[in-house]
Length: 360
Image (cartoon, one colour):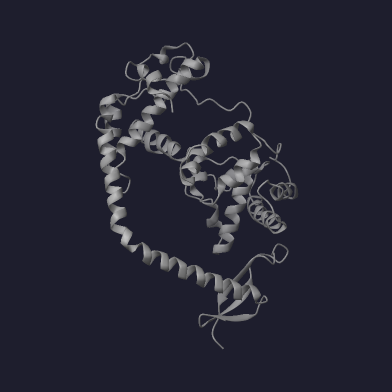
């Protein structure tokens, strides 16, 4: 975030960047576009499945032959689904499939838990290859495990590597590092909690010059979450939005030809954040109190997790030793080992599952 000492003088004084000749009167500004979309593996827009599968198997995070074969499998699952739709490129087929819309996760295309996990991994892989560019809504509709572990090494971008190294130097938890690498919380706050609500309040809003009446209504609605419950982090959201405005002011000074047209007076005054420190301390006190209340239950939780883990270990050991189609008993219940329900040409021996079967 920008330094308030450096940029704060623009926040309340309303530097009139909107009067710059860069912004023709009446024109609705569009965000600056990337001059050239990153293509770490070249132009794959019309590549065949075999080439894409080979690239997926050669990603830096692939370390075993089993993982390589699995990547080929999951990528083909996704691409065969997309290949049913019209389009000259994979991006066009992706958009024609409806998966680029909000609340349409790719896992919903499959019926079993295993296949849902496979096709989601396939999507994660093609995103790392930059084969398609999903909308923000589509990306957020899908839940990826370890996305940064696959995506970041695949890019081969020195600037990305430099950013990752800078984030890694901070002594914070891995969860916070992951969020920092993808600006997850900030993007959600600016795009969803702030701008989407502003457009709903004032559909004609086409720039960041927010009228005080519109801002006042947004601020009033901010007090409640979408589920109707009171929001406890409203000041934190105000601080993030204010910092966003201050960043634009700083960038406008450094690169006026690119950012000056976007700078606008910040609608959030210092008075809106008065008492933020005290409220933040009270919030931390409530968090600490919840921790103290739950601490006596920790041994019960640990015992439960250890029991589940030992049970899973024993189940896996017995199931792994059984041949496909064979039955075995675990904890008094009979199971049958089956091969994952994919086509025979794609099934891999490493994909094993066991289903309950009637006792003979």
